[in-house]
Amino acid sequence: MGRQKVTIAELHRKKQNREKITMITAYDYPTARLVDEVGIDTILVGDSLGMVVLGYDSTVPVTMEEMLHHCKAVSRGAKYGFIIGDMPFMSYQSSIHKAIENAGRFIKEAACDCVKLEGGSEMAHVVEAIVNAGIPVCAHIGLTPQTATKLSGFKVQGKDADSAKELIQSARDLESAGAFMIVMECIPDLLAARITNELSIPTIGIGAGKGCDGQVLVYHDLVDLFERFTPKFVKQYINLSPMIKEALAQYKKEVEEGIFPGAEHSFTMSAEEAKKI
Ligand code: KIV
Image (cartoon, protein in one colour):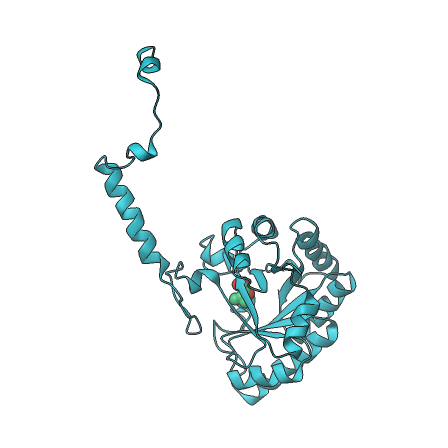
């Protein structure tokens, strides 16, 4: 049997069999193709694109139109990975009607397979409503960047017993509301493992230790294309920024010195035709 598109059933099977789930962000067609080619299970078109691609200071300004534009490009590039469209700030908080309508746009217009939204127990009713409308939802708890100001900054969450218990309850409520998977960002590894063991849906960690069912990283962090800062939980597998800068500097030099383009990059015409010009 040839390669199949990843499904929710396959992600759940992996959890049951203790096979790790892989997730990475992608925001454009060429990256989606690369990610798909190496067989990553799930592709998150994260609102992190606001920072790493669009140059905003946070994810807060990201709009539905920006998200859909990038989701469409990723959908065109990825045939097999399960595509997650990240609902931007204020696209699901103000009313259930708006939340369902916007979630539907990710599926209908951008060919995503599901949506992701941030928040704990307080968002369970929104998750339930979107799921009831027929759209799978991936939840996101812990450090939720859209509401980082409310959390007093980009900090590890659930470090004391009370806040840890709240996160455990959030995970339970989101599972009961119908979320098929849950991202846990920046929480202690012991807490993440505890939640992972308790839930029957897969957990995906970012800064949440080894005990999760899978891991996610932001593509631009993993390949070192985002130079503003690097969170502690990031492992850079390649340092592309210096390599790209070196190539660009070489191009500039060769153009300035008349080395590029060479004959091999130029087109010719016959001497006879040239004479007629
Ligand atoms: O937007 C994003 O990329 C995310 C991940 C950090 C999980 O939400």
